[in-house]
Length: 127
Length: 127
DNA sequence: CTAAAACCTGACGTGCACGTGAGAGACAAG
DNA sequence: CTTGTCTCTCACGTGCACGTCAGGTTTTAG
Image (tube, rainbow over all chains, first blue to last red; front, top):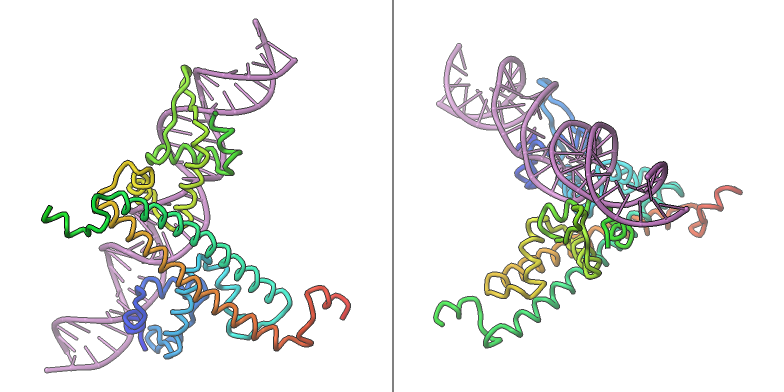
């Protein structure tokens, strides 16, 4: 698979894929002409990388973590790192839940004090 | 209250507080000499701003949202915006839960295959 | 009154995850 | 063999939430 195909399959830009390789997160074989050739498994690998990015991890942290996920490294230190990042994500979830609850409270207030209380956005068009 | 005191009370840097004002998120009176004077309520306001930043909102979005939270603006558009951001946070929570579960799976695997399975980080020191 | 501490306004620097050309080479189709 | 599309490697640009230094002013403690 070439880089463009991997990009469309994963929804990640070509530039991002090259960046992942630059950061050591994604490896690729090369054709005789120097073009990147990816295995099918690269699709899942990109999804995993994106998931960890979305969880707020830096590329450096992901780089440290990936060997553990691949089960190639399993030391007390690596397990501690995994737990640490897991706890970080846990805290982030807690923060997000608080923010969501806060917004929910605001929404409930605004909708209860809205005239009629059962009006929708479209109702206003006929009022 | 002056800016340094607000900074220590909230745990946010002085530079960040000035940045919040620059973005229109936080207002302050001025002394005759031009120094910022904050109300006690600014502490909660800063906490709220930090919460929304932590939820991944941009300062522009926060700027749009704050009047709704202050209940000064309550239009169908503002309510739609609130719900949109709430849903965004919801999706982010879902993604984080997936990432956490993925890490949990890795942790369970690594700890079950660890020699002894009940060893702690310190055990390795005496092995 | 004086010295230290806190504060002020620019304004450039930073880290990160890419975006965006520039110029040149690789590759499949006709 | 040629044309069009894809790909390559630099390398500078970007957006955001600040960090940091400079040079000067304000406030407070003694």
